Length: 61
Image (cartoon, one colour):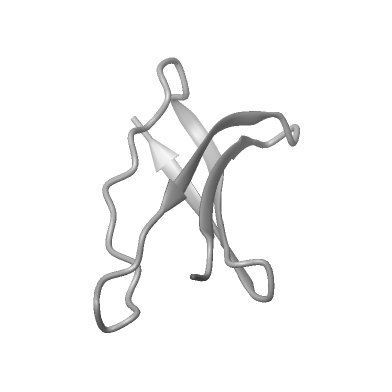
């Protein structure tokens, strides 16, 4: 089974939280990720399966 991980970072590269995500029967990653406390502002979310990764800028009010 392929492991998929979601990691929240601040803009300084500090890890705010890390969550192991699961796949549904069709292989899609479907998850709700809790936003860490006190992370207002611009943060980064990286989703990776060890072979590919995608990073998105997340703005939290």
